[in-house]
Image (cartoon, rainbow, N blue to C red):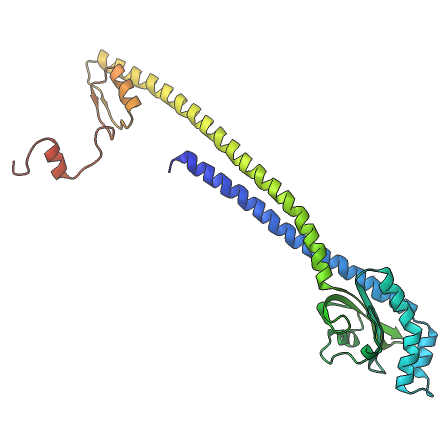
Length: 287
């Protein structure tokens, strides 16, 4: 493989590596940005739900004359309209309330059903807020959405006590759809980048060939002048000149035109075993 092909291949590999690396970094940054945007969105939603709680909710929770089932029913009547307004206003968003003392969800959406007013799973990551008293972000399975979600759990703190939590979430499939849209947009950009890469590689190789040809011509011209001077000096001193390392027909022709006395090199023969040299000289090994 000649040097021109090597330059062409390495140039193409370098450009393609750069494009692929750029693409991979873009995918990572885009996914992180999409995920963070959704986390910020659902965090704002869960905090908004906290602000919708008024004293009526606390009065219902602490009412001594109500059973737990009655409290759940009253809380659902008081809070479900807020959840319905939120889920109707924001497409694909889920939200809800959980009350710790009742060990149950008291309002949620979308797709509300009274049968969903139950306790959360013992393994639910939402329980983390009762240990940290801080917002908790996660992407995992949601029992109210019956699918994987990107969610924020917000502790509901009243009088220094966590009385429950609110949440906002969005289905992970919806996040992936947004990411896919960005991906397809960049895919067209990537195709253009690859086209530019191929054109750039071709232009670089073409320029390299041109520069290499100029360099060879320059070297050849200088060598010719130097060799001509050496032969001229040798002739003036009655010395014979031996030119070594001749490999091409062009070199041979120039040396002959300068009347060089002896010419040797790979143009004639490359190194050979002694037996082949003897045979070449028509001399047997016995002699």
